[in-house]
Image (cartoon, rainbow, N blue to C red; front, side, top):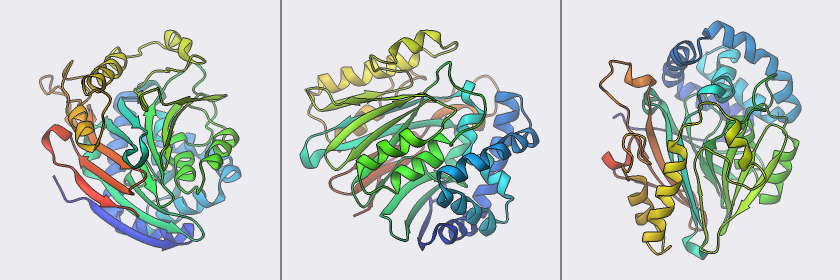
Length: 354
């Protein structure tokens, strides 16, 4: 496993993107090759067709966030990679909407011990293309985020104590004309917020073409947002201060959508049930170490909370779904713990954000 590339930069969106793009050029090119294979083998669409498709989204993103477009233009300039290729990486979630994959997220609200956390499950090849990006856009908070090279953001924490974890969701409303990229542009906008109230405004104003789940916190306030392209609903922590979310809708408002989704994997329900079982067994007394234990769990292996790729069918392991990273965000203490790769095989690294 390579050492994770660390990038730290401040300035205007274009400059931040440019420095990031220049430093991560090699990884961005590797990520493009990975997604070229993913789109072809998983979605039966060529990279060239993807580039044609994503070009229709530029106007939508520009009307939502000029700064996000400038950031992507900076990545393009710094890396020497065409803008539409960068755009394609940032639309990858929308392009593979029928192949969306697994993540397990947990939130816990208890004063200074508050955290949100997730195991990030995606194509195995992503492990080699992860970047630790710490940046501050003029007038905004400091942001720490772990990204796929070339993408604007993924899970992360900012200096105001706003944290973000992300789970894939699917609904029958997904698809059609590309809207605002849910993970990258909407997620990027969220992590550049100073207040949670602004997050709700950003979600409300984003014209989306995909469903998604955001596990959020501002300091010791934790909540979950389930989004469809047309609507959203928030979920509060339970009486024990806990939220668990995987890859199906859990709010009473949207729960009925699960039955309408063809191919929804049963492991999403098992992972949620297993996490809740472990939390109950811990008497709802959660901390960083107990969450690490949950994230290393192998019940229902290989489709477990700590997910592993099956290696016996000859398929390219870089295209198989596995846990490619694990992240715990302490939103009151300003600390991030992470692994690259399965947490059962790694020790967590500590990063201090504030």
